[in-house]
Image 1: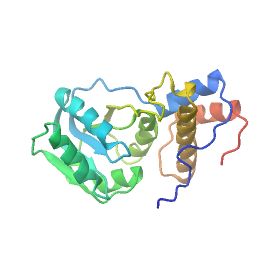
Image 2: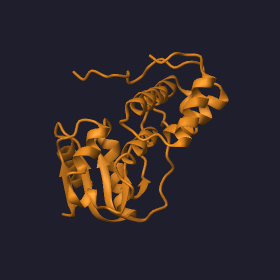
Image 3: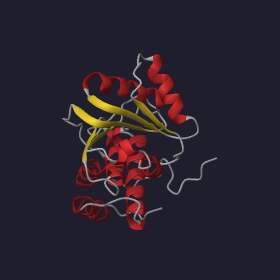
Length: 213
């Protein structure tokens, strides 16, 4: 059983409009305008069915040299199998099957020359996770980065999007969890906090009265 430093769905404080706006900017990255890249990167995640459908959509539009699928516990192999079921039949893919976290997705992938030397990378990630993912990958790579986000479906059947997450209890909880992880990982140096990110964190902290749990 996985022991989490931050609960997946912690109890959030009351969020006013300014806090919601800052959390949205901090956690969600916009969809890329890039149509080509060296690496199309698929890190492991908890929504393989949704992720593979998002990847298939990206494969139809983005010209890429290599598709890199990362994740252990058979994640990478499962993703590839699901992609093949959906029609993916190319052989220009690379599997990284040792990583167990976002940080390891990147650290382990850096052992692969095609990834380490890439001049452009488009990552396919859950939308609400794209902000923290960007902070993680920028700690290691200085190349052109873009995101092809896919949407998590909440337990109530609603999509978790930048313009509606604050309307649902689970949405508020998940985004607050992302904020707490960004704070924790930033403090210990696992991710690279930009000046903008630090300013957003200060705004969120000043607009909420809850202590970090």
